[in-house]
Length: 142
Ligand SMILES: [Zn+2]
Ligand SMILES: [Zn+2]
Image 1 (cartoon, rainbow, N blue to C red):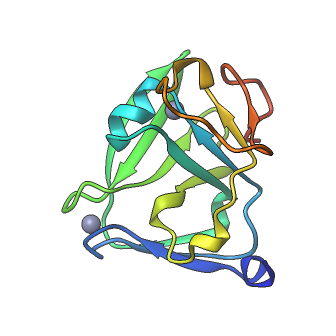
Image 2: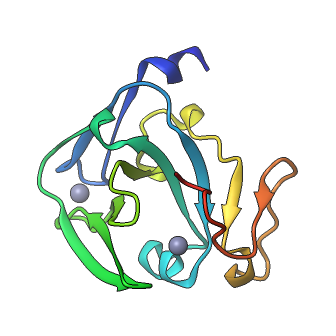
């Protein structure tokens, strides 16, 4: 885990978007909401949360923006290959969530919790040690 503290790199499937992060993430959690299922085409997104300034992105991201509870949420993805790369939210302007599946070092991605378990795929069983929340409790990410 020592390497996780000095930062690391990641990128999309095709390599058009690359990024570097400094330091260790503030938190790592899964989101099983239906929107994250649709965006990922899978059972969840892995949100690796950093202070916004800790991540430097190279390449062009496309953005799908929508409003939830009166707040804007932006899903940033590679326009070439479609990989989900990052999420930013008006609600938490100081943070940037990077998608764990895009990390170069898989050992840097260790989720400790999952939100929106109530919307999860019924077959999915998370391992012990991952705290499960039925929805999105305040203070989970920031
Ligand atoms: Zn790409
Ligand atoms: Zn979600």
